[in-house]
Amino acid sequence: MLLVLTLMTGCATRPVSADRDGPLPNPPAELAKVPDAVPRLEPIRVGGPNKPYEVLGERYLPLTGDDPYVDRGLASWYGRKFHGRPTASGEVYNMYAMTAAHATLPIPSYARVRNPANGKEVIVRINDRGPFHKGRIIDLSYTAALKLDLLRGVAPVEVRRITYAEIRAGNWQKPADPPPVFTPDAAPGAPQRETTATVAGVATPGTGIWLQFGAFARLDSAEALRQRVAEADLSLLPLLTIVREAGLHRLRAGPFPDADEARATAARLRSESGLESTLVEKR
Image 1: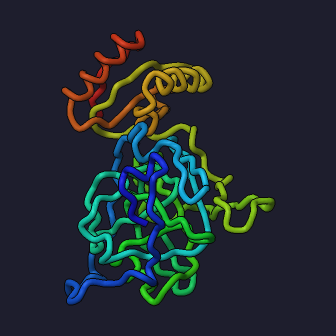
Image 2 (image 1 turned 180 degrees about the vertical axis):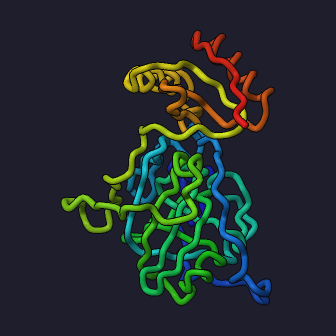
């Protein structure tokens, strides 16, 4: 559910559910043909909508790493009461865009939402916080709910985060294989983590502008440096990856939009944390 940033300080009004909300009159034609959100690498914001917060006596701890995440529960949607108002990210809510609200997934991040009743799936961009009703795990935009055939009310869905590792590898366009394994002792409705995905594994080399922090024969040495870089600048964590190239494990951050931004990041890390890096351009 849409929440202004004052929510993050604990001063929130009670969220409004979709059954007390609704569509705008005369919605745009052919909304079912609106493309899904296209996952891209966006640094996870430190603080702001990603800091711990409390709503209605419940405390939430948003994820800030590149952890895989799968949850099953109820989905709702929100519309005209919040259309054009700020989301928790500060962006304006557009009920006709492919976005969603989630209590703990990073802002911004991307998720695949599946309606098990009909097999329909959509990809949404998480840019808001909520919902905060018991059992509900995601609040969809009007268009996302329309494409999943969920406008009639609250219904079960599966939510699967699309990780940065998947985006870099380019395999986010199809469901993960093998299917997720859920922890059997988790409480009903509680978030459940995949045990089949490899998050801290070795990626294949990607194109673009990268900063390379080191190259090691041993994977654990590259992992140790990854931890040091992440501790120096948490916002870089989603951009850090280890690639296997020419027989070595290379720790890189990227890709950056351009070489100037990469050089500025390198200079800042050098002056603030003593971390050395070299610019690498992969074509």
